[in-house]
Image 1: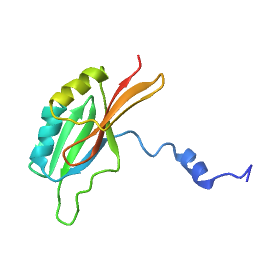
Image 2: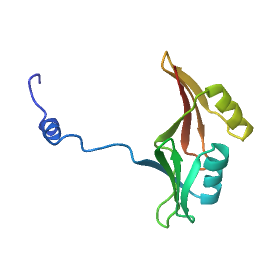
Image 3: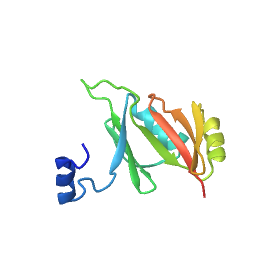
Image 4: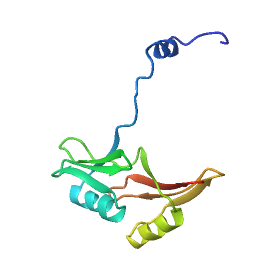
Length: 134
């Protein structure tokens, strides 16, 4: 099908980008207090606001990371996306998080680009810390 054009691509280029940027990432959590404690006290994120057991929002270097509390009729399921947090020193960050009870599941690297380590929060959501090559 060489030479064929994609009408959807042509329409998208006519109007410019639809998405302007990443606003926030949120995870569903079963226990808001436990989840806030993990992200604030274990990872050291800055809690910006909390609306009881319904919502909590953190500032992460100018981006927002949020927690959405359980709602009747919406089962909590972990998995799906992974939130990735940048660190300056992966080894130091891993040591600190290990002291705080984090168990790492996987470590890896992208040759010449970055090193990372994967773990889960207390609701089973996937998280990573990443150190980019400088």
